[in-house]
Picture 1 (cartoon, rainbow over the protein chains, first blue to last red):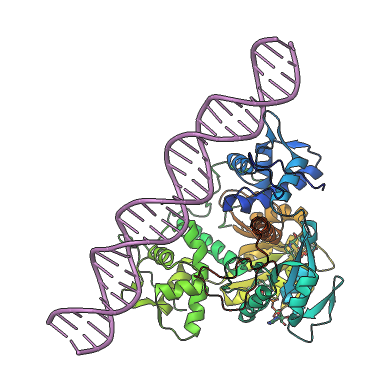
Picture 2 (picture 1 turned 45 degrees about the vertical axis):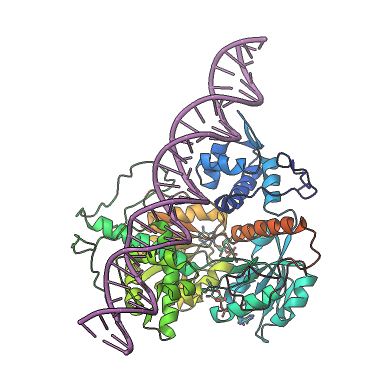
Length: 256
Length: 256
DNA sequence: AGGCGCTTGTGAAGACGTGCACAAATCGCG
DNA sequence: CGCGATTTGTGCACGTCTTCACAAGCGCCT
Ligand SMILES: NC(=O)c1ccc[n+]([C@@H]2O[C@H](COP(=O)([O-])OP(=O)(O)OC[C@H]3O[C@@H](n4cnc5c(N)ncnc54)[C@H](O)[C@@H]3O)[C@@H](O)[C@H]2O)c1
Ligand SMILES: NC(=O)c1ccc[n+]([C@@H]2O[C@H](COP(=O)([O-])OP(=O)(O)OC[C@H]3O[C@@H](n4cnc5c(N)ncnc54)[C@H](O)[C@@H]3O)[C@@H](O)[C@H]2O)c1
């Protein structure tokens, strides 16, 4: 919560402490650690071992320690990591000390769900503006925000200091919207439309495509089926598990 | 569309053609190739070069060729790939020749959007059942489907031959729902709740967390800001691009 | 003060993924 | 029929990521 004073990498003492350039894989995991830490803090933990945090975040403990080592040492040997300190540190590195403004473009089926999602606000963001191209939707109020016409994007982007644009329009409109966001000065885009966006250098795009996720699951389902088809076991596919992950609930084989 | 006859890996001629075990990174890209191929087919292409397909899918052409080589050779040197054939081939490998049943659990804000999403049906899936724990929601009809109580999951899972479960409940309920899905015989889960699920061996879980995506973008935003802060260039940050990606739209520097 | 148990931080090795660069294969054309 | 243009498939080198294993550090208890 307090503006955490970055201790700085060895030898660096500038006004803006240069971020250590983290491996991309590490960056992708930091948010998960952050979520786990918040959960642990709420449960009353003041410190947590790498083993405990790794379990809460669903990763290997060695990986976690190496990840954290990249942001400078914050653990105490024999004890673990100070939860509050680590939260501050990760939030700083992720740039969450300032609450970044998010603009949603395309307030349809999905856009409505996103506009009403509390998880943005609770995890460091501020949904600052909603846009749509459909005149019928413009003017609608959702969660205290009025849907504006997408042409107002440039003005609104500056007024509301938009840092991130979220595209939830049909794929056919996505590239055009991306161009508009870029023209308005937005340099980070989260794209829900199933298409490839081309953007100038310096602009980051991340994509979320549910159908892709399902298709990856489908592949593994297919593979599992073709494997269990080879050994002609009648009904009990893999009843006895080789152990390992603790299964909290009841479990059954696929074949019923 | 037609049940494509798999030519088989060299030496393998079983009834169920054993899937070549693809690198996980390749599997994750196949759906993207598939989407690009459908798009190209609609545009009238009968064949496509690796270069063309790679551009449409947003990847490197060498990577694409290597990926495709893993599923057996399907290109013609000097010509390219047969679009229709490649579509069949990828759909087969991903297990999309059978339309897999998907169950949605948690028909709230997000669940409603998912239930009404046409992208599932058009890309190989069939939303077969909707579940919620809230009695007030049970009975509601969405897109021709009635919301059932989550306790009916075991029966419905068999009746509707559910292959994949999608969790869109609050995080607090997600583990319990996952256990119920597993108990009902579901071996693939897509989780939207921001929490770690523990499941028995043999069950695949994929997670989609929007806040994580935003936080990764935030990191890069933070890094970009700390970099442009060092060199005291007035306004024109990166006006001249070093070439490479074609920028279709207007572009501006971050600082405005 | 000293020893003991626990935990971090990291070197090193291995697995994995990427991209270049080019030989081999195919087509179209003269 | 032969040749050149084109494009695939892949060997190889490189970089990134993961995991193991253990020395060094820290706190606590005696
Ligand atoms: N609904 C889902 O659950 C879901 C899931 C995954 C992905 N998606 C993807 O998200 C996107 C939106 O899905 P949806 O179901 O909300 O569609 P939708 O048709 O309900 O909503 C699209 C909205 O975008 C607006 N729009 C169209 N062109 C625009 C433009 N140029 N500028 C601004 N707004 C514009 C439309 O007016 C409409 O309100 C699609 O690309 C879809 O594939 C949706
Ligand atoms: N809304 C979004 O845009 C969005 C975006 C990203 C992630 N999420 C995540 O998706 C999940 C759902 O979000 P939401 O906004 O739809 O929440 P919501 O509260 O609107 O909906 C949750 C639904 O789950 C149902 N539910 C609760 N316990 C259940 C149980 N044990 N079994 C079956 N159903 C149960 C509730 O009755 C409710 O209908 C949350 O975990 C949220 O963090 C939502």
